[in-house]
Length: 244
Image (cartoon, rainbow, N blue to C red; front, top):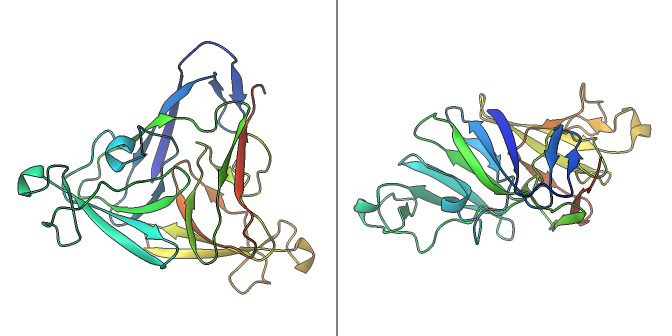
């Protein structure tokens, strides 16, 4: 999955810098991210607030007919499947249940900060559009629940999971937290556990056995989703500063 981001200032006031992406921002910020999907399931996350509800029709500028979306219900630990296709099949919105022809009761919501799987029927560039959240000088807070959480950065940043503080991923890193990172090419997850560096890893990252040091610190791309199995239900907070 290749990602390209562009941010457009909606007003030439209160400019600041989101240092990890070296982009210039202002008080009201809109932008887009181009994602080139790969064949098979792509694990994504909407990096912007779009429209009224962050519905899939608001998050994406276009969706190829036949594309399947899987959204996660952490309470039941199950996926909900929705298929986007030709409205002429029978759904005025173009959204169908997993059988491909029964109209879905609603358009899927791809909430900012939540991950989802997408199985595209065409490998054309997909564009996320919307408003950067949080606004400069404010903070996003994403709830963390028991069990597996399917998440993604609500702030359009990527990089090392060890990047902490304002204008970064500032990912949840309670000792014992397990991250599942999707490899679309092999359709498998890579497991990484964050824990006490005194166990043996200077970076704090371990393989799935919990004690073998991981060779590298995990990273996330902009718009990439992941699973988190937390040991503490501390909300994930991300802040955007007004200035560098």
